[in-house]
Structure formats: structure tokens, C-alpha cells
Image (cartoon, rainbow, N blue to C red; front, side, top):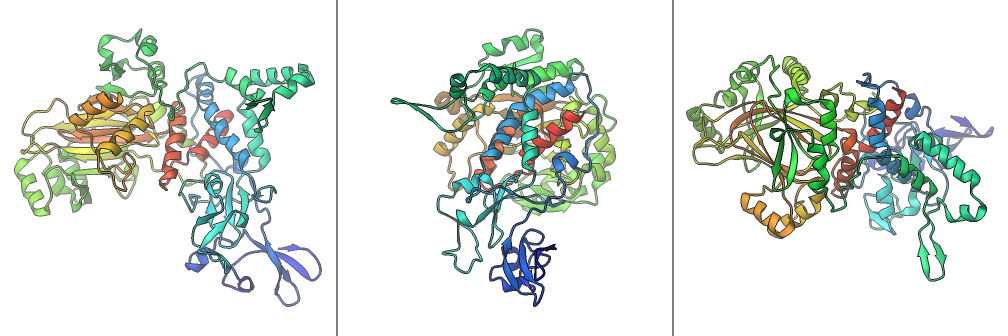
Length: 609
């Protein structure tokens, strides 16, 4: 309550829109209309008469921000120490450019009335999503003053005149919104974002910027501007070059930065220096597509990072030698026999069955035939993302510890990995579920039918470790237990074009709906007509496959196999993750990773290490 005069007080809304005195106002939020928790509570304010409790004026949208989490978060889930003196600098340099892009975008957000953004408190235990596209809201966003519809910066920019959406405004036309109805909000103080942006400029660059700006004469300064306006000189229209941009980019990276939206890939020759110290048996070439294949005992962090920066997969063999468990069907039958599990068929039909039945039929041909006949399914069932209702750490802590103990490059793909940026969201934020999760698949059957994981693309990096495989139910012994086709991250556009041209997409997205598998015939045509060749990885027990974020991939499950996978966010691939986030936004699919928010807090966390 804020006192304004002896007869009028300003109240922050403390109850539903339908309760007195707020029901005197003839507009209610969507949530109240649907009998859900009110969206305007603690957000909207009114002038209320102290004499009769009537609404005098409103609504207001006063600032309610108490703590700026960029500088006062309760604690981080991650409290590890740098693994080497250069670890912090390495991580910061990898994410610097992408974070600057995110923060610069925040500066572009403008209110319809050109007033400043209203700050609001962060709501804990809640993933803040755009009501239109379902992307995660990082900082600035817009709220309809009438019905509390919340939209992101991009959706607001897409508004020319009106946008579709449920609207409770009594004078609205066809349930549509106009730009003028939206109020600009922020979750962080303007100063916090400016300070964060400034901190991304290397010290050497800041020093040089001060020197240049001090020495520049007025005429030179006029030619170097940070304005977004164009300069007209005669018939030539020039976009001014930002001095900050020139200096910053001079200092940021020595490595080559690859933009996934551009269709230009590194040539094999440009990668030759990476393999200069690698033995022949430690590299694999597939029609010019090279990637690292190496035994776990020969892999070190420097070599991993050297190759991971090229955004190519890495194949690590003999990675489970230190495992203390057998990871066999018999073990899972004992540990999880009473569980009810969901098994998916090749046509995405889902069947519920007893865990013991599934695992006892794993390597027994006759049992499997009887089980699948009873279910009415094929014989190539798979259990994915298991445990499906709880964390592996809680369900089977011994296996969780075994995975974390044996997984290669633990600095990246373990729960406490220093370079796993997904660890760095504060406790006030709802964390993404990154695993580890298990993939337990029946392989080929007697009729030659083989289980598949359709083509898809993840917003995170991932590592997939195979712990067990057998060919007891197969008609023929396969070349490998699993065959992976992993496509270069910068060729996703050609891949989508091919599928739209040769597959019946209808309303399906070529990649993000997990609807298609490219056959050998498809791969031959894809190379001939589009010049796209995947990395082909043959995975067997003990092998770990690292898949960079943004690389579309598919898997052929030739053998009965048990795998465990973990998702992570590496500094090297944040640009790809941000690109996939933008693609998901266009499809109204959630960005559970919260890439922009994670980037900002990762920077703050790393700087404080």
C-alpha cells in the first residue's frame, strides 16, 4: 500500500480480478477468466478511495522489483572450482560474443509510449514463457494491460497492427491485441544489464576504446557511431560502423566462429592442423568428413577442446573400463522388475508393460515373440528417456554414480562439470532436466526389421554411452550395435529442404517433429543433389558418442542395447544452442534450456570464480 493523499491510497492488487474492489474494474486477466491463479496479483496497482473503497483511478504498473537476481541470487546449484588456472578465461572467451548479442538485443526493446520498462519480481519455481510462441523470457517482455497476456520481444516486434490471442477487453475486436495495449516490463535493472554488457568487453579493448575516443577529433568521431541510423552521402546509403564493435571483435576470439545460419562449412584442409598430432587410428574420415575417434585412455581435455571447437562429433572407445556394474538386462530385471514402463514401437505407438517382462525378453527370441504378440506390437520396441517419472540419481543412485565416474570429459558432461553451463542457473530458477537418462532398445528381429531413432536436432550438446549390446535376436550379425548419422550443424537448411522435397511433411517439421528417418537411398541422393554428407559413427559397447548442439542426427539400433545419455551446455556451442532456440520459437516449442538466462548467469558465475 502506498499513500498518495488523505482520501486516496495506491494499492497493489492483492487478490483475483473478480474479487472486490478489483471487480469494479471492467477487465479481468485470462487466468481469472479460466479460474486459475491471477496474473495481475502483485503487478497491477489502483488508486482506491479511503472513504468508500471505490476505484478512483487505474490501473498503474508500479515497479515491484526488490532484488536483482543478476547480483543477488540466493545461491548457485554449482559450486565447483576451476580445474586449471586458465579454465575461467577459456569459458568466458567462448561465450563472450554470444552473450553480447543477447544483451544488445535487450537494448532494442522499446515501449509503445517510449517510456522505460517497469521492473517486476521473479517468480520462483515457474518457467516464464511467452504466451504466443512459448519461448522462455529472459528479461524484457510485454504484458497486456487488460488481460495480462505476456509476449516476448520478438513476438511484439512481429505485431504490425494486431495479433491473435484470447482477449478479455470488452471493447476488443475479434479477440485481437494492438501494440498500444502492451506495457514493457523487465526482470533486471537497466543498470544491471548495462554493467553486464560492459563486463563482456575485454580489458585491453576497453583501454584502447578510451584512448581512441579521447584522441579522436570531432570529424572522425562523427564517422564512428553506435547509432542504428543510416548515413546518407550523395546517392550512397551507409550503415555506420560501431567503434565498440570493431574493437571488441578484434580482441574476442582467435578461433574461427561459425554461424549456424550461414551455409559455409570448414573444409577438410582447414582442419588438417587439428589432426597433425593425432594417430591415424584416432581419426575417422567419411568422404572428407573428419571427426575424432579415440580410445578413452588417450583422450585428454586439451585434445577434446581442440576438436569440440570445430562443432564436430567425437567418438570415444573403451570408455566404460572403470564401470563397477554390468548394466545387463538381467540386472535391470532384478532392480526394476516391478516397475511399469512405457515402450515405444517403430510407429510411435506406446505400450505399458511390466519391467521384468520387458527385460526378460530382451535377449530371448521366443519370449520376445510371445510378449510382442500379446502386446500387439512389433519386436523392435524401445524404452527411451528412462526413468520416465523420476531422476536416475534418485531411482538408481549406484548406476548414476557409475555413469558419472566413467563418462569421458567430465569437465563438460557431469553434474558438477565446470564447463557445463547448464549447472549455473541459480536456485530461484526452474532447472532443465538434462539427465542422465537411459535408452533401452530391442534390436533387429528375425524378419530384418530394425529399431530406429528418427532424425531430430537438440538444443543441447549430448553424450551417449553404450554399456551393453547383444545380437541374440538378430537374423544377421550387424556391422555395429548402433549406426549414427550426424549432420554438420551448418547444413540444417539443406537437410530441411531435401526432406520437404522428397518426404510427405504435410504439417510436420522436417526435423523438429522427429518424424523422418533417412534411408541409405536418401543419403546417396542428399549428397548428390545437396552436397550434404553426415558423419557416420559406428557405436559398440563401451563407446561414447558426443553430439554437438545443433547437429541433426538419427540412429539405427541394430543390436539389443542399453545406453545412458546426458545433455549439457558447452561454452563452445552456445551460438548453436541460441540458433536452435530461435528455430523452436518459430514453431511455438518450449526452450526448456532457457539459453539466454543460462548464458547471463553463467557469465556472472564464471566472473566470480
